[in-house]
Length: 114
Image (cartoon, rainbow, N blue to C red; front, side):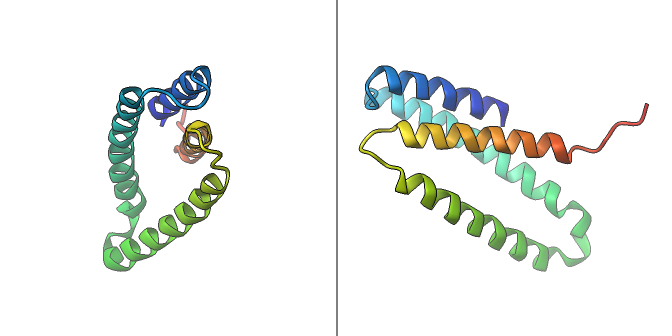
């Protein structure tokens, strides 16, 4: 989540410098790196979420999938409604959501015993 947040913040700065419309090759590099981070993040987070639910894995997978899809729909709609013809809302949305994901992961991390 941290790498994705750094990528999104850096891309937002680059997109802002280009007036919201960076070059295609820069956008493609950013999206490729972002999708790579998302692929690693989603697979591992789904596995961690289902770890204590092994005895009901099928039901757990469907509930977790439904909840994540619903949340993605709501958050994607908010970001999509802010589209203004530039890539700034996309970059800002990815940065904010990546930072929120990092904060949620830090909050949910088991506390270490001294």
